[in-house]
Length: 178
Image (tube, rainbow, N blue to C red; front, side, top):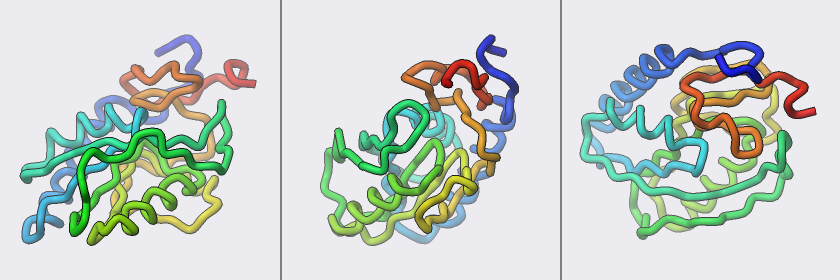
């Protein structure tokens, strides 16, 4: 365990197993539909996307968006689209891949943006859900783990761009960010 991590909330083995289960559910849900376009939100969702797609047996495509609403440990409430999708999405079944649903502001804005561009549906798959911090109404269709209101890092989640490479989800020691 990293010296700045207080405790491990979700192990690497638990993440892999949950990705397997969610991949199987996506396989079933989209078996009779057009395969979804997975839209991963950079940078935090990359490790989750990499593990998840190993367990999806459909002819999926994926693309990336870079959106930001954080400074340090807090959401600013202002959503910035830094990188948009590389292809048109009119009529596409979209599955947004996110590392964590926290306040919900970012995902609500991205969902509305994708629908306004003509997506036929926009669903959300998230590795982590932190409902205690929600400030807008938003529910992910696929949730890996529901976690308490603690500041977490690892498996793509960062604090000031550090700790993304930890192979687990851990609670960052408070003295590291206060």
